[in-house]
Length: 271
Image 1 (cartoon, rainbow, N blue to C red):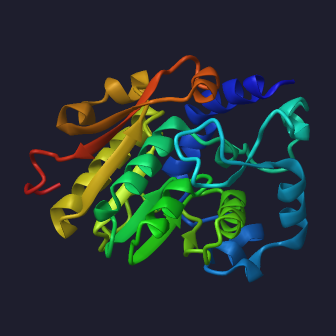
Image 2 (image 1 turned 90 degrees about the horizontal axis):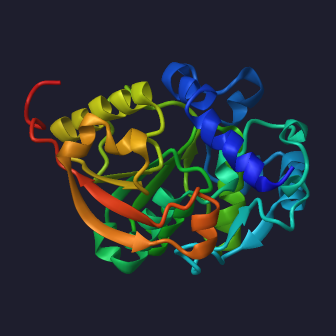
């Protein structure tokens, strides 16, 4: 089964099971992964998982908006490009695809390092970690990557190694609806794929802005769930990027991706 089938399943899954995981995951990862809830060095990597990821992904920097960043992704040269998705031994590998919203955020940060230089940055739903990597490359003083998938956390560490960076801290738990952290900037890409999850994000991000005066940047290629959500009326377009042909083909013909600044008009009101 080609990766196009993988992507179709992943896109559908993002609207069902994965969204439910973001909404309901209160206590972090399963018991098996509690020891991996927070990483800062590659010493915590499970050797067996590392070997599997290195064997079944390809190091690439082409076909996306950020050729400066090398990533381990699923490509046509990988075994699981053609294998049945059920044979993948871990959770659905959302992290193994460089989604267009994340590409736009990463490109914007690399082109405009002043956005993160000397600032603390939270990369929410980090996936492959590309946007967090872009923030480190651009001089952020502190970076925390967040994803609920422990395998994504391991992949991020491998991707840091590829780009000759010390691994940044990674937290593997659902922090949406938690207390507003003291971050200068929160970035998130491709996260508005489920209405209930989008509602939770909207409320939590607004709280972060109200309490901590956090700046929020959102990357999205114009998916219906994002454009139709009420948050869209409180966004300001920062920049739009034309997507490379390969990314277009792998995202149902989406042609561009936009970075938005979230500036809720009621940020000073009680939430």
